Length: 273
Image: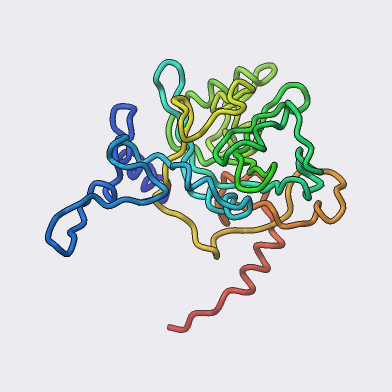
């Protein structure tokens, strides 16, 4: 079975009639020493009480770089007003570290009406507009003014709807977008998921229209490429810091760093059979 088919099968197991039931791990009982059974729990996932495996506040309450890496493999869910759901696996992120980061909107610790979400509790969405047309979505983390940019998704569910949403924002007639073109960039991601400025300052752990659920196949360190961020201009040393993270070998990533991938391949141990 291909990796994408396997992911879709796992996705189907997670959801039922537009609601997400608890994962098997949450439903399975744990037997205590006295013989009583109690449900297993994880601090990252909600309990059976909420009938969801949605990622909870503790997951987002991580340092920025840690959260940017932890997002890889997790699933973003967007519920449209008509009840349809769009699902995408996060495959690329960028970390923006707050006041010290010359490429961050919160550099110098400056808080404005525009970037207020970056200073809110971890898990808060920060949505801003670029070129006066397109939107990008970030998620606040630990650290004053720190946030993670969601840069690319691997579409899993609702691809036809994503194409419709993308087509409405494209000028003039164009060829139908291929799967890998739907969400391979921060603005494309927002177009495909119908995310605009109205989502700014929303809480991913509380919102009924957008949330995250845990991925079933999370990457190991050897699967994650750490490289420079995209399109931040001349920011001195910050232009070169490896604060962009993506899943190695994933075709839904926006920009691949072939040099870094070759270096990683050269450092891998040779297995002996």
